[in-house]
Image (cartoon, rainbow, N blue to C red; front, side, top):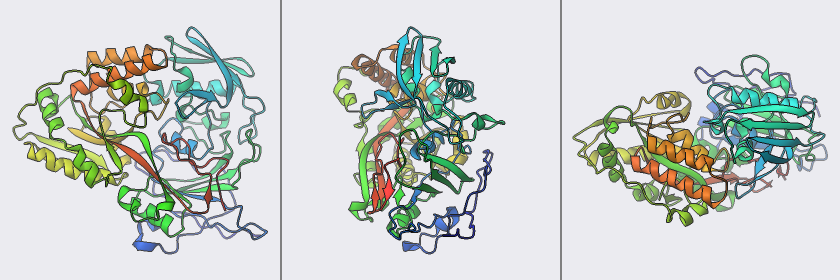
Length: 525
């Protein structure tokens, strides 16, 4: 069967982000959208899915998987950014270690490991090749980990961690940290520490195109519009069941849901709560996830530099109303930063003494600007309700709502008095200590509240030094209590992931950590 003439998806590069060009030509597989139900015109502007033609025997059983994803690449799919989780969800880039459902480390590209003081030794899986045909060796692992360790900014999982990797022989790598670290295997499971072929590191950017080890090879990146992956038949874990994946980035939640409804997409991530009720219940899966919707308050400057004013904001927030109205009951009211996706949090929180917060003070009409983003459809609605609640408490509130790619930098620079963020709490290591450090330590790389608090830093350091198991979990909850005592963050609710799968999709992953989506066992009937 001859290939159809190429039809390119439009690309809309984000301001200031490096984008990787196509590295080599491939046979065209795409056709533009035709029409969509319910007037979902935004999809026409954001991307297009490939056609899913039947196989040569006419059965249609060997179809490519069409995926609609929420956020476009922020950094040209560099694994050193949050784009790494896209590479993981597409099963193209892999790490030395994986996590099981409990957050414990299990073999991936490394088959076993052992600790000796500050040094961990990892034995590599034999007979693994990269998508460019080169072999996985200790040298290639050292290259990937060294680039990540020296990146600016560092991957979140390495916040506060000085890591050195060394090749002992062809199949053995040692990883040494400045201090003894019980979480090294879990850290190495972060998709931001994926191991790529040497070709990925040519030039000033890191390109994962044709450089991973997973069952699918990334072959095309069309800016922020789409991406394509082909099955890699030499995959060490066995041949994938689907011949490939076609991805379209669709920031508009209504359009993503419409793509599932109209059968233009096979798998849709992050179905908005407002759309879930409009879909056939058999098409959606709802799972509690380690993601907390939090109001971060700027402690460095502005009205919320005053702890009493922060306490007034905390008292003004009615999270139950937000869950009932915006989330239509498809979320859990927060009891802390860590929610029901971590069942041990509720069990052990009773053992932890809460930190004392300041008494609420009169805001006296303080003018504040709250920022948030449109990529998660619920957040602008949350912002509007918070605006009303805070104004009733005596604040004067202005909202600044944009796409995430254009607002993240301003938020990290502390340009807002408050910021609403849907934040994954165990995304990187399966252990929330890394998230707490990143977001609330004085040196944290994602410190939206600009918090500098000696008590919080001490509690976070203690949690990071504690061995795994319940002792570490109690230390993590003590650090959570220290953070909450500052009122630098007001946790509102814990989200549930709502994923849409077409009726003929088999084996799609439903991962609370958002690391897996299309695996080697996923296919379309």
